[in-house]
Image 1 (cartoon, rainbow, N blue to C red):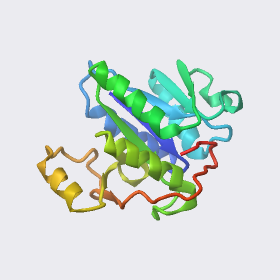
Image 2 (tube, rainbow, N blue to C red):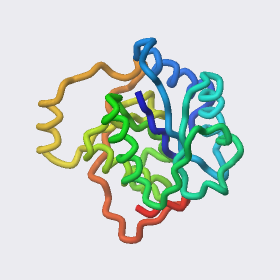
Image 3 (cartoon, rainbow, N blue to C red):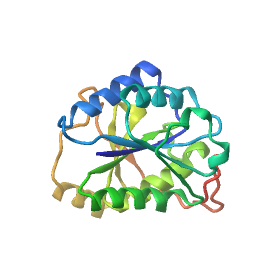
Length: 196
């Protein structure tokens, strides 16, 4: 199972490790669990907690970044690095490749704010929209692994009703987080160097 972790939001080390441990427990012992993380020049405390967990688990991990040379040393042990300027298509491409190999894939997000129009999350909201459109699951890592769904019309709600209902990803989840229609961005930009 592949999980791609993106975002600049906060989550304490204890909560980060507990959520990720809960996630791993959902899979059989023989399932391969690996991650693609966002390689940053200035990692947040949440990024440090994430990488601490990845290294403790001795997981295979790859990095997706806008600048390989600027990445912090906490990502030095990656098995592969993807340097891209357009994030969302690459994320979907990595997920599609995992699916071709018979693996499931999901996106884990760390939101800066609960407001989906927060400038710090616009690039993440755009990526989530493309991931959902490609048919993959998205979970809010800093909201108890609540599932994020598209909430932009009756057609999406009807399609969601027709889909198989899965148990919530974590017992402590407060329900499903909703993502309103992905906003139109007049001038796409990002503090991470991504072009949307």
